[in-house]
Every structure is written in structure tokens, then in C-alpha cells.
Image (cartoon, rainbow, N blue to C red):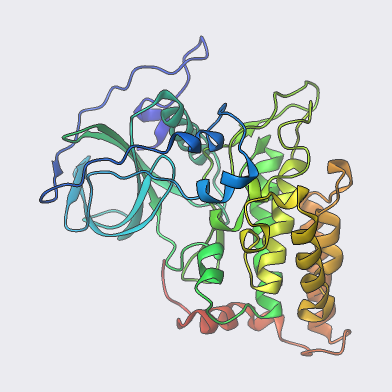
Length: 377
């Protein structure tokens, strides 16, 4: 059942209705760990929170949320049992677990679990559920179910998502595995642009566009995730300043532009393409100071991006890093430019690789990831 059927839709007055769920049963792990108190400073990364200082921004990137759930427990909802197998990650407001579903189209899923400890956190979760219900695209992570349950220390909200085996691009790069080949960078960039173009055409700004929110599935596809900081935009009216998200990937107009539009996300896209090209993550250069105000970090990223893959991606990266939001290319323009690069490489016009390389892109990516082609998600 999708989110709007489970209490996430807005009422006619614009507010959110009271939840109308029957709480599913939950098997509690032995000696559950009490929920950790979230660091007060992490408020800089919640919608409407205070501004972050550069000195603490890096430490605040990873949240402090801890739930009562652990491997070996299970959740039940609408006749489906989700057996928790491992923790995948944690953020300011939620933990994410891998689970096996007893039935349904997806055997293996990811469950994002949030303790309802604040209205702000609940608002982010409701927003993500609403967005994912409406955004149906192969390069946007799919929401399968939403529900709530009562734990011993809190009420929890859950979003069941399709499972992406290789995690985020950020974590893949941090793991120092095999660097991305040029055709992989092109393929991933085009896929991200395709998903981004789809949501932008529907009036959605992601608001936290970074490599940690781009997931790699086991069929060689990438998917945009985490819409908690997203918002709708209007070209005809001024928007309040964007709050929340990861400051290391924030554009120069963060917290100041009187009129936000989809170009807000394009700076973060430039960060992602840079990271895939140089195979290093942006925060490693920043030392807690956001990239848009960190000349030293920007110089290092620029120098490496110009050399990576014979400079193939640098013109695109440079345009995405434009200080003027209006000068950045749209997602549609990024996709078109990447398709032109693919066509050129596939014909051997740049003197590399030769015909047929891009037709082998999917199997090449799977080989790099250590999987055989044809593996199902």
C-alpha cells in the first residue's frame, strides 16, 4: 500500500491527518540498545535548523540516530514479515536495515526506520514518503510500503525501499575499490541526469544532491534516493531559503537566494561527477568548510578533474560548478551532453576505445562490481 493510503496525504487545510494504522507486531532484539540522544549541533542539518559553523559541519555530516532494531529481529505489516538481516547505515533521524520479505515482488528490501522523537524529523519522513509515492522512474529508488510500529521506547515510522546491493556512490568510492572506468562515469552521469530531469519536470528540487544519496543497484543502474529535504518550487514566486542537507555539497546560493529553482541541485551534481571522475569524495578535500567557500578544496578538485579520464568530463563539471545558478546546465542539457560524448567515444572519434565500447557498458559495469550480467535486483 502506498504512502497516501497510509496517512501521509495532506488534508484540505494543508496539514497532515492523524495516522490511522493498526500497529504491526514487532519482535524486539534481546537487550535492545537505548536510543542515543541526537547531538544538538546536528540541528544545522534539519529543515529550519540553525546555521552550521564550518568547524562542526564535517562532524555533523553523519547523524547519531539509533533505534531498538537489530539483526535477528523482524517486523510485520499487512501479512508480510520483514526479517532484519543487517544494518546498512544511519543518519540524523533514521537507521536503514537490510531485510528479507516473506512475500511480494521484492525478496530483499531496505527499511528506513525513524523514531518519532520530533515533529521536524517526522515532517522529513512524511515528505520523503509523499515524494517517492509520486516519483516513478527507473533511476529513482522505489518505495514499496510504509507503516508504523510501537517499540519499547518510541513509536517508529518505516519506509520499505527497493534494495540496492552496492550502496551509495559515496560509500563505494570510500571503500577504495576499483576506480570507475570512463564509460561507467558516462553511464552513471546520464542515468542520474535522467532521474533528475524527471523529478525537475515535476517541480521537485531534491535539496540534498550528493553521492551518498545515489545508490548502485546490482544490475548496473544508479538510483536517486533520500527525498527528505526535497521541496516543490514555483518559477513565479519567491521561495524561502533552502535549509537542511549536507553543507559540503551545497551551492553558493544556499540559504541566501530569494528564488530557488532546479539549478540548486546542479551544483551537487557537479560534485558527484567530480567524485566519480577523480574517485575521491568531496568532504575529504573540505576539512569541514563547504566547497563553495573553500578555494583550496576547489582548486584541488579542479586540478584532478582536469586530468581525470583525459579531461573528458571537465567541461561538464566546470559548467555545473558555475557560481551563477542560471549559468549551470539543466538535467536535460547534461543528459544531452553525455549522450554526445558517448556517441563520440563509441565511434572512436576521440582516438580511444573504438566502436562498440558503449554497447558493452552494462556488462562492463557489472564486471567491475563483481557481478555477472542478468542478476536480478
